[in-house]
Length: 107
Image (tube, rainbow, N blue to C red; front, side, top):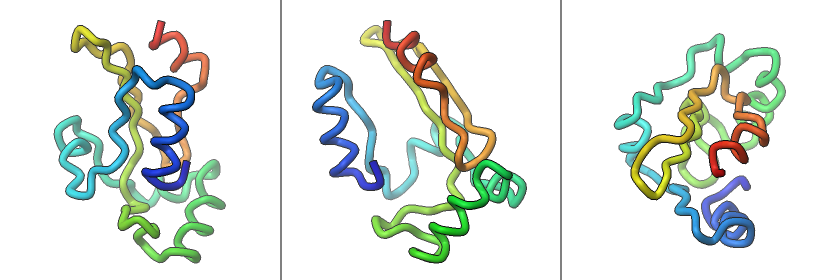
């Protein structure tokens, strides 16, 4: 998914009824939900080390879209009623919820 345009295309193809927040240059969504910056331990965790080094080498400390590789990821699924179905705060920059968790949250 690498960039907002590519991610939007994937979201529209697989789940057009779902609104994906894909571009938040001011990082207000991250701040609102308490998603912090990566510590060195989270940035260079064994599962994230290769991805982190590759990204830093290619783009520096910000990605090609102006992102911040030190920004910790998080995944939220919010139902039509406004309730959180899933709030997943990643433990490293390469930690994401399992597909089964996402599918369960969407049902």
